[in-house]
Length: 315
Image 1 (cartoon, rainbow, N blue to C red):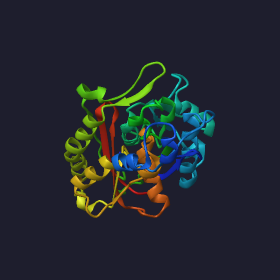
Image 2 (image 1 turned 45 degrees about the horizontal axis):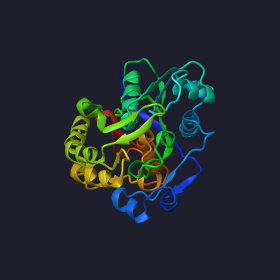
Image 3 (image 1 turned 135 degrees about the vertical axis):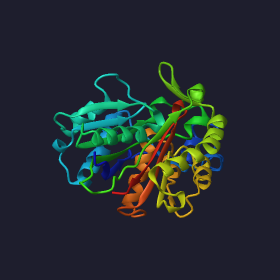
Image 4 (image 1 turned 90 degrees about the vertical axis):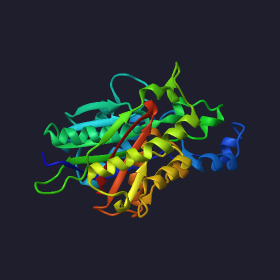
């Protein structure tokens, strides 16, 4: 049980960009209204011929290429998503089929916006226990499919995309690259973020979510750092779920990570649910804003009022 590490990351977003100005032609809103309340400028929207597993497979293929691995090197695929249309085959099996991964364990994890950090912990545990040697962990959501585009309180938030990470066992003697997870939920307030009905639609109680995220989550995020044996001020980067900028910035400030790069991908990508944490992390790596070995706090939160976080070493 040597622990695991992230070997590489990758991300993918659809080509179509939806601007605030274009949204203002669809609902009663404006660029100024959206920026002042949630800090979002643009978001990427997948077309009808771009299903969730396609978004996920694109991101996963990039992560595999960055790790220098072939599909046959993967023995576990975990996909975090809450926008799968069908129950079976699940997203993980569909992604494995698209990539040509021959015989993986394949499972989906539905913890909505906290999905990726839950999935990452699941893969870390599997590697630590010897049940997997290399895992592909993906967060992918097509939020545009479940959005009421006449509701300005929710449609201005969402975007589509995917992010992925290759998780592998650490060599003997190497410090684990994925720290202990701290996860939990507030089931009694699960109704505050919902994807319900037929067809399913995304809805939330915005003020309740904002108060919970900005008051209850900062001490939990600090506990994540404690479990990893690092002080918040020693973090190199903080990647929170990209809910909206008015949640990300206060939460990061209350955490006390004064020297860290704070991911603000929500401004250009919107809220991509389970994709938001790996998407933002991959972009920081791609742009060179963080370097190999940097200590990064990953912290997802949202639907079910669930949360999960861990400190990882940048690949």
